[in-house]
Image 1 (cartoon, one colour):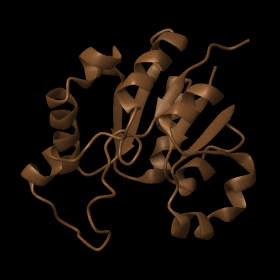
Image 2 (spheres, helix red, strand yellow):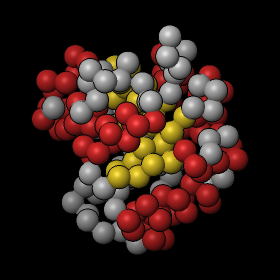
Image 3 (spheres, one colour):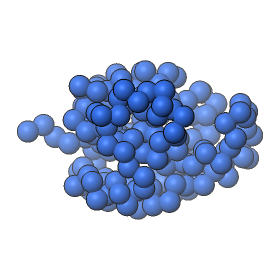
Image 4 (cartoon, one colour):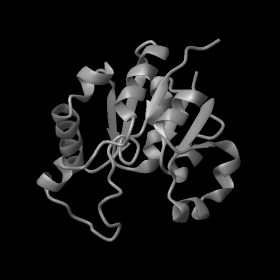
Length: 163
């Protein structure tokens, strides 16, 4: 049996970016730093990091500017100390479709993302795909992938499902 490796998206899975209106293209560094954590994320990731023997990676699509903001946010919220996930276990890419290649290179076979489009790229490659608190509009657009993923609506649910 191959080892279990978990991949986790950051935006809307760990950091709650949903409080920013969808039509806003720009936010300030101050606004980004004030984004709240998704309820239960740190505690669940700490437990999952144990269950996956330290094989938990954060894989996120973002701009270079946002990459800097994400790293500052994670550091200022003591993410690494609380969860035990290493800074070296973070991967960024510029396009959603690139996540699949990053996951493949890391041997990720379990992946959590809030975008069905992203998970659609990983069908037939990852063992388990989890759609976290999906956006209804985006799900309509990519509903053909729904049969291949498990929808989860909280970090407590993640812990129940991923043993």
